[in-house]
Amino acid sequence: MGIRPSVYVKDLGKHVGKEVTLKGWLYNKRSSGKLKFLIMRDGSGYVQCVVFKGNVADEVFENADKLTQESSFEVTGKVKVEPRSVGGYELDATDVKIISIAQEYPITPKEHGIEFLIDNRHLWVRSKKQIAILKIRARIVKAIRDFFDSRGFVLFDPPIITPNACEGTSTLFEMEYFDLGKAYLTQSGQLYAESGAMALGKVYTFGPTFRAEKSKTRRHLTEFWMVEPEMAFYDLDDDMDLAEEFLEYIVQCVLTDKQEELKELERDTTKLECVKRPFPRISYTEAVELLKKKGNDFQWGNDFGGADETLIGEEFDRPVMIHRYPSEIKAFYMKRDPENPKVALAVDVIAPEGYGEIIGGSQREDNLDFLLERIKEHNLPQSFFEWYLDLRRFGSVPHSGFGLGLERTVSWICGLDHLREAIPFPRMIYRNTP
Ligand code: 4AD
Ligand code: MG
Image 1 (cartoon, rainbow, N blue to C red):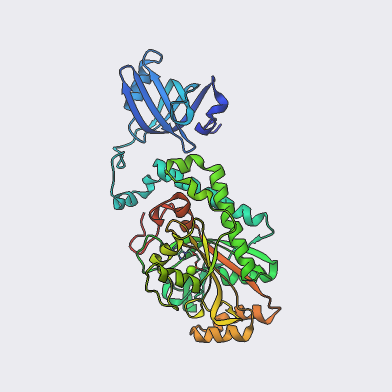
Image 2: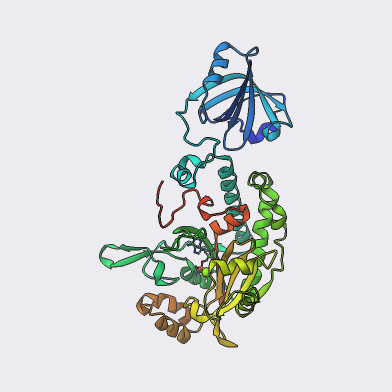
């Protein structure tokens, strides 16, 4: 027979005037004489259930009285339209059955410190704001998949355990791998995606990636999700066109489908409505000039820090694409600009409103000899990269790609202060629980 609910709160509109049974948890309760107002949440939404002493058996009224915050229960009643009530409907309860009475719940409507909340992350995810964020995250993931799936890209899953670094050796999580020596958790699926692009033309990877970030900032996690498209026969301009279309699409999907959640988060959506193509494109050198004009004593050749990115991002009402960074500060696989070998054909996309870098990408070095030079310059063990070099030995073509950080994107779209709320269980330098 099964015990699954036949109706969920989000579908109450289809049952007006009818009797339904809902299953969920007590979000909140108010009493006034012979009336009890129970706010039930069932994951799909919230609904106020009104229990009137005169309408129900004594036992039912007592059950309603016994319910504590987060107790699980079942309620039966007639669905009424009630514009003043949360969600727009109300339930005239005829029956209340207790499933499990919750002990004193640690998260109350009063303010809690952030450490306390993260210690209780397994419960904190039940809170209204957290539910809104998690729903938006899921919508963004779907938008990402839909975008690539509908444009001829093939999902290509790279390994998580890898023998070498991809994005510099300073942020590698190391492990002993049986008799084979050291192995590492992947920092990026890109190198593998490149082999996929040579096989399938256009691919994307999407999964968890790892960085042993020593930085304790609001923009860094040690485990985060990244989506990485990689395309054969794309140059840097094509890469930027794709990134721009992609970001516009994601933001528009959230605006279309997640208004209620954005409202719960008090997000200023006028800022998101600006996220339309074309995005401004400036070179690194122009970005340095901009910083100098703003009184920042920035030297050409340095990498932008979080504060610099914020300053640059504030200049624009939509994401800004910064291209052609000094090759010295960028990864070994990036192609140098044939017109100026001091810079790499790289692009970073900086989100507006101070959210910093959300995308990093580039055109890849497709020349075997140049790539060999880069591997030597970066002191990388050539033997581990032989397979990667093969991609240049067997039908090398110009190709490009980028990586979008999911949590940075969620954080920006939701207007969060810190990445830790953008993922169900954040992993940071000082935290790996719960
Ligand atoms: O700029 P990154 O390091 O680029 C790459 O990994 C390339 N292999 C991508 C590619 O071309 N296929 O990282 C890409 C994005 C960043 O822009 C940022 O959004 C996110 O990944 N990111 C992080 N997010 C959370 N915590 C961290 N520690 C992150 N490091 C990077
Ligand atoms: Mg980057």
